[in-house]
Amino acid sequence: MERKAIADLILKRLQEEKERLKQQFAESHSGIGHLYIDNLLPETLAHAIHEAFPKKEQMVRKKTLREYKYIAAQMDQYDPLLEEAIYAFQDKRIVVLVGEICGIEGLEPDENLYAGGISLMAKDNYLNPHLDNSHDKDRDRWRILNLLFYVTPNWQDANGGHLEVWPEGLDHPQVTIHSRFNRLAIMATHNASWHSVSPVVGEGDRCCVSNYYFSKRPLRQDDSFHVTSFRARPGNKFKDFVLDSDTKLRMILRKVFRKGIRENPHQYKKDQ
Image (cartoon, rainbow, N blue to C red; front, side):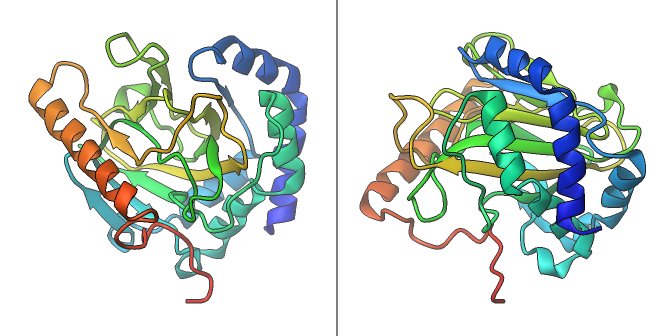
């Protein structure tokens, strides 16, 4: 199925739930604006997207104190359905509609899939609390929204691997958005949008299609440039000290090297 046909289905489902989604995002806007919608696509198509996922051995493993997961952005190496599904979310009609739902103007998709694409998390994988990099790969646009579409059939809540947002900071309880099959979650990204993925404790692979929307303007007036900034989960003071120190060191380096010492490989290079 081509991206426009997939986009037509996404658009129809978002329009059906538009008013409820607007209310959901507005109610959380003062902290970390977020929303989710279930049954986004026909089940047969959502199943097909899941079946198109590569095995984790065919993806890039990222394992550090910060995170442990598998990612891919060079989509021409994988089943074409995955690329079509990812770029369906970049259809102009959907970008405009999501902007209307979230009350944000000037949203732009990212054809480079910088930090986007697909991800997979298996047992014992995790993603510590963090702030996403504030900008796109060229440091020209601000990161505004994170779109996460979960496609693992029968993924149980007890398995873990769920999106967590921390609207009152890491000293207060998080809000959990379960990564259930055929669910789209959208969250705002700004200087205080701490979020994480709970450790995966069940068997199987939690698969996700992800996109970011950017803008020429930051979401909040007090937003400032920052690198991807990690902290530890509450209660692990030593790990938190190490991760916080790592972030500060990388911020110092980015003040000297504006676009980084090396190019971030997590992007889609269509000429390769």
